[in-house]
Length: 267
Image (cartoon, rainbow, N blue to C red):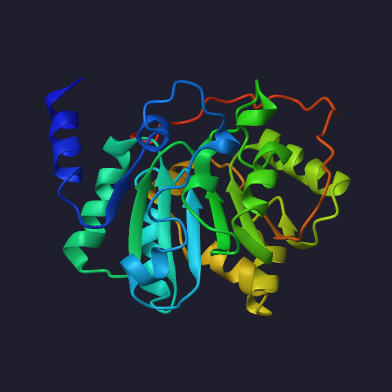
């Protein structure tokens, strides 16, 4: 591990807005704990009273990377609380440091595996989820953040009717998610395969709130896709309670291009 990463990890330990947990941290040495059985963290049910000290809505960004979207949303909506979630601490360091330096009190970062997300939030504690430019995980459905595997987990922490947003460059993940929503009766609020196209621009101007928010912020990573001429896709849906789920089985063409790494820079 490089010295720069070690330095970032050490600094992360000093940030008041960063919480770091692994399965071992929660399971008290037990070797075999399933994701859904993972014991709750001390923060579950207490984000508003123990950290944010308000009763504002809680919004998650899953796979937050550098945390640009988390910080950007927090600056845009001071009346909401935002938590960026990712396992990569060296990436998360950038957003955590920016938020700390700016004195943003409505931002926190949670470093953990998203598979155990139910260990960190109580029922109905989360109001909204953003999934922004995550790995499409074309080989294994249970790793896709919009799979029914994850929908079951989100349902345990998101209030009924809470919004889930997906922004992606990946035609594969967009097609997969659209099929998942076709098979499972989640109300779709907005769906477009060209977020910055003229039709989406008109819809945003007509004040479709979720679409307006999706267009309002562009991260460094998103700009790289636009520079490559990629269309950005966006879907938002309501997470209504379900008791059974149907996983898509259709064949989907794999993405034919190579993704940039989260630490990519054109400079």
